[in-house]
Structure formats: structure tokens, C-alpha cells
Length: 95
Image 1 (cartoon, rainbow, N blue to C red):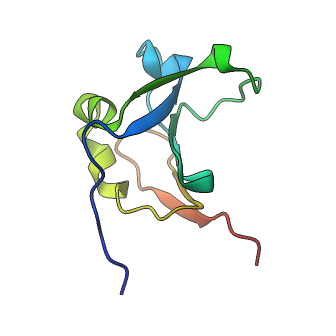
Image 2 (tube, one colour):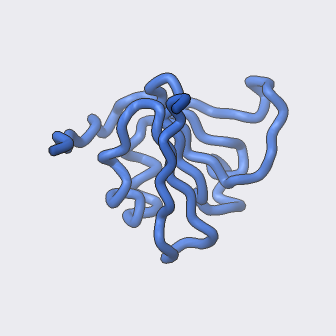
């Protein structure tokens, strides 16, 4: 059985600029290499200019539906098509 641990409110997470400025909702949550990333699902250049660092709790406060995926393991991601829709989880580890 997978042990569920909730991250700290102040745990570092990365958000894309669209999530940061609240112009788009979180539709993709990734834990690639263990880091928390809350993204709008759009493609962004691999440049620090397109991402911000925030405390994980601040992101969850804006969208409490994110609580349902806070049990993601490192190298796992969850995606949804819209806020309120079901999360689809994917293991990022090579099979």
C-alpha cells in the first residue's frame, strides 16, 4: 500500500507563468525528479523566464481540488482536461 504523506505548505514548487498570474488553471501536476510542478498544460520554452517558485500550499489554497493529487510519488504526474474533471495519473519511470 502506498503511504500518503502531505507536503509542507511552504515546500518549494514550480508553476508556469500562466498559473502564477492566475490566467489559466492547473491542468498538469508533475513530480519529475521529485520536484512539484503545477502547470497549465500548455507547452513552454525550457527557460526560467516561464516559471516561478512558490510554496506548494499557496497553489493548493487557490485550487483546493489539487488536494486529491498530493499523494503523487516522485516520477509520477496527473493531468486533467478541465478543473473539476478526473485526474489521469501516469508513471514517468521507464518500463
